[in-house]
Length: 261
Image 1: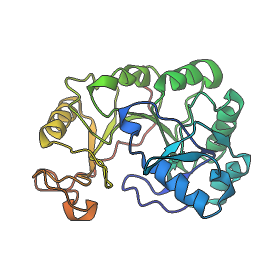
Image 2 (image 1 turned 180 degrees about the horizontal axis):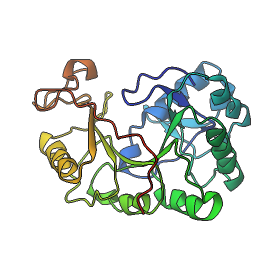
Image 3 (image 1 turned 60 degrees about the vertical axis):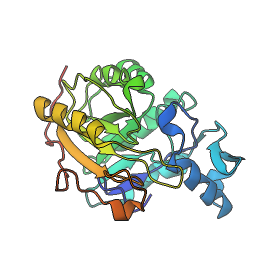
């Protein structure tokens, strides 16, 4: 709920806290570690959401809806790109339909902002957009996470929802994704994993995504190598940097009113 260090957004907004692991990409989720630290700092919203499993912090599967947080975007008068629920998933099964509608109301009433919603549960997102919401907000971007070829079916759910911008986060990219159908996908974010337990990223996995983005006119954003560089050496995220093919890639999707069926 402050200025974000995430390269592709301006701020984060967390009306929901807590989650559960959905797939292999969740193994080293930064939000689990952050929730544990926030609990240790005495932040009530995060108390009891995680537990220790060996040396690691992991979700308990508790999801907390924070009605007080719904007021925050109204206080931000200057336009921002806002990452919704960086510490959870708006379309988690334990988030009620009613609360999803409450979040949608806030986004509808603050059209000066662009909201970026990223989920690992695009099937619930598809259901919500078809059965609960049935409206396309021009300031809401909808995305899903794809960490390897085992979860590429998420893209089909994403493509089936009507949105101004549809995007995929290939982060952490922990394996090849293979041939993709990127029709109707406007933006791709690619990044390696960071942290002491980070899994390596390989340049050829990035190459196959980049080439398919070029073929489909999908904007390409390379966020980071993470803990493993392109030379397969382990360093800090900062030391490995963000250069790919000799440059940084900060492409963003075109912002205009559109809905691709």
